Image 1 (cartoon, rainbow, N blue to C red):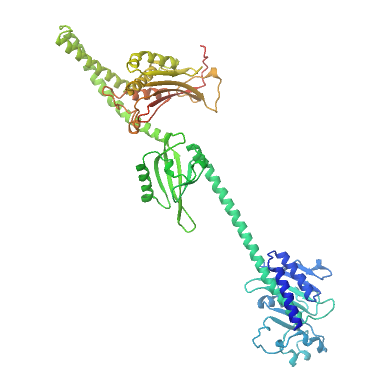
Image 2: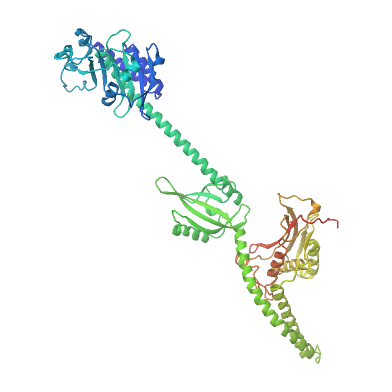
Amino acid sequence: MANSSNDLRQLYQSARKIADSNNIDELLNTLLEDLLANVAFERILLLRLNHTDLSLVTEKCHGFKKPHRIPKILPFTAASGLLHQVYIDKEALNLIRPVEGQKSSLSPELVSENDQLPDNGSNRRTNIKLYVSAPDSSNEHLSGKMDYQPFSTVLFDDHDLNITSLLGPVDSFLILPISDKYNFYGFIIADKSHSGATISYHEVRLAYALVNHFAHALCRAREHKQMLTKISTQLFEIDYLETYYQSILHNLRSGVIILNQLMNITEMNPAAETILGYREEELINKPIDFLLEGDQDDYECLFQDLNDKLDSTMGLLTETSMHKKNGYAFQTEVCFSVITDQNDNISGLSCIFRDITTRKAMERDLARNDKLSSLGELAGGIAHEIKNPLAGIAGAIQIIARNHDKESPHGYIFNEVLHQINRLDSFVNGLLQFARPGKTNFNTVVPEILINKVLLASLSKLSDKDITVTTSFSKNPPPIQGDASQLQMVFSNILENAIEAIDDKGTISIETYWDFNSTKTPQHDTCCTIPGCSSVAGKFTVAFTDSGKGIDNDSLEVIFNPFNTSKSHGTGLGLSISHRIIEQHSGTISVQSKLGQGTTVSIQLPICATTKISLGS
């Protein structure tokens, strides 16, 4: 009873030591310490089973005079006999070799009372096996004796490679499996080879109980380590995927905006910040319609399209208008795609967009050029057929008009007919110029001088409407290569339109400026403008801004189309001809306007650096 109480106390203390530890090496050291402290083992060897390559690895040893001779790794596939038996049965095995003729070597203390009887339900016999090593299985000392009937008898081969290589020649030893119901960690092999004593049943039971406690702790620690390794691997994979995702997201040239289920912005990439002019923190938690341009009805149509046409695999590709932080509206191509969680539930949307303003302008120019090509051929043919008869009619009317006084009713009629003929002739000349533009003669021109000439010619019209004109010309501009008469016609046409847009008392500002590309910085006195030059170093800009009534978006789309005009007396060819002239100068002309807020027409001509022209020349 005293032994049982002491055993329970030792088991309790051992259980407390290992309760909170998940360190395998600490647990193994504690196991060896408890076995040495509570069981009189003289040598202990701890082997770990490597399930990957089925080998036995020596983890700990104690009491060996030459531990370096113990194999560090032993192939378990070649194992046979007792170690394999313990691995299969997962039961303790205590082997003794009786001394022939000395029955006392199998003293009763080696086995309990229950183990000497048939199985009575205590299940102890299935946990501890006592093997008697018999060099000669026919030895009469081991046969026909009731004392030995309960024991298993095994012919222990002194040449068993596993035991011999680990323990050397031994008479008795104990093998304990370190395992629980589902996991097998390894073996404890212990003996009392120094004193030659056998291991008693009581010592086996206590050692087996201690090892069972530690087996559960070791398996728990190993699972904990595997879990930590798995978590560490998953965290590494998550970190890698996040870095990979962020790298893709940050290096995309298209803008990316992530939306939650409420259509509020949760994330955006640097390209979106660059395109929109907003920092990410300025847009977080704001609804996506904060960036959309247009009326509430437009948003509802867009979101209705999302509901009706959004494909969970392909997304929805659409075009819409967005605005930058500075208020500038631009056309975008947007792809909305769903974002799903691990349960395949929609958790948000991704919005990938790009500015297609340039592409739209090119499409409009291409469509316009196709249309102009057809119109040009038609206009040229019509003008040719009209101009010659018109000249004959004008000549005949002039001859008839000589016979009538200018003040007479007939003279007034003839003068009005001639006036209308001249208007028609002017229109036909415009058609011819549109259909077959004349050759551009490039020379050095100063845009400011041409603008002043246009202002002088329009002085009376400006005065009649009480329009104030302000000019802001750039200092020391590079010389411009162009056709002076054609450029003056363009400036005159734009100024005329600005005057027409102002009803009374307004302002017109004219500004010129120039800049170089960052990739090319030619000397200031070696810059020129040559159309079509491949070495474009910058651009020269002329901008006309009026305070008139502005232009609606629909009219802006077709403003350069021929015969498009809002004037009662206009031909609708002025801006179309101007557009063609600027194209011949390898430049661009653009119009920005808002209804009721005025209009700005900008002309840009390329600055090149292939011909040296001194500013003083």
